[in-house]
Length: 197
Image 1 (cartoon, one colour):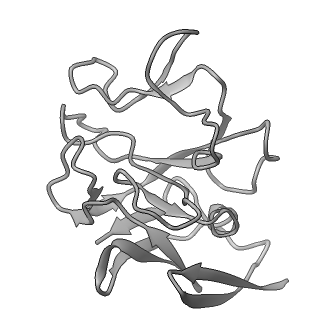
Image 2 (cartoon, rainbow, N blue to C red):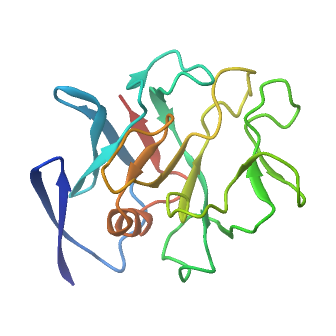
């Protein structure tokens, strides 16, 4: 099956042609590089697919800290896909997958023992809920940034997720269009390396 992806980054159109092979296994690696002249934008290369992405407002940083807005430099692995089952059917992927519920949240408090982990919150409890009114978290790829060991203040909730309509910067994640995310998910597995920088 041949398909062509057309996306817009600022006023310049970018296109990537690729071939989807139903028998193809997960990719060994994908790479995220900053765009020339704009550290808040970048390019993700996955096999023959190259797509524009939004990066953190602080660009790619080697020494990521909580709240700095930077996307961490390094090599990471995807842990699982979280998705909004009330909005989308389960996408094809080699990753373990979990539906996002109204109780799912992420702990971003460096003083909390659950820092940089998925947590469940009851009604009325505050926190960074994964079930959002917008569509940014309709698909989230959790990566293993700052997980083993988890170090307080070294950053949390670094995901691959959907981009804002204007490709505005993230708080430290890598974001993309929904069509690009669905294409990428088909080739992501737990052993795929995500190389940022």
